[in-house]
Length: 269
Ligand code: IPE
Ligand code: IPE
Ligand code: MG
Image 1: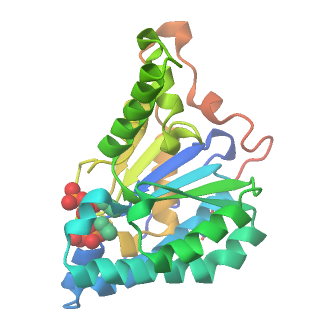
Image 2: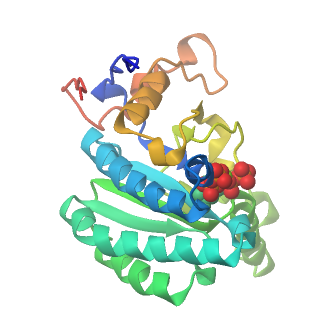
């Protein structure tokens, strides 16, 4: 069978989304389609993470947030959870040098206290070591839930009100935003979900307010550089209005001015 040619998406360097979030879904189905155990899909998924982090850095994205493990995923079978934790540790160990050499700051969000010692022993030092890297922030959402993050932010503000540090009227949308670790790199401009489902599954809820959403049927282990270019090209064809009309509408280009200037990037191959 002759493979169908996919036109190469045209990605404009000036209009890049600054912060891209990805719901990496479909590992289990990828493996099951091959008659393999679900964990094999996670293994291949971890290779896709490596590929996409490299591509994102090469493109010049400022922030990439990857939904790797949700607070709800703890309820999966023990063997699957254990394999995911081992793969996470292995990923951090094998990528350490490349992340540091390429100016990537590694960050993590979520209920990190629930992660096993084998992960924390690698994650914590790498977060510290890479803290001064500024080219791109790679955030792993681990034991993460959007509702849980909102609740934690509300709890912090409530504590400050109870202690007299804040007044009830200081509890504003901006104040909540300021307490969200997932939004320290800015709101996500583009959120991609692989694996064919059209849902958010508790990812970055508060930050999603004006994010552009891109859904693809590609299962995460198959998600390629070209799939990422396609998602970004789709983002670049949209007009972000933020509730405004007429002159108030800022063209999409303005969202990312300063990320890369002057240069046009045509991505091939
Ligand atoms: C995403 O793939 C990885 C995690 C949620 C950890 P899944 O494991 O959800 O794969 P599917 O959706 O069952 O195919
Ligand atoms: C979302 O995928 C979580 C991650 C990608 C880490 P799930 O597979 O857990 O979501 P549902 O169950 O399809 O909503
Ligand atoms: Mg899934």
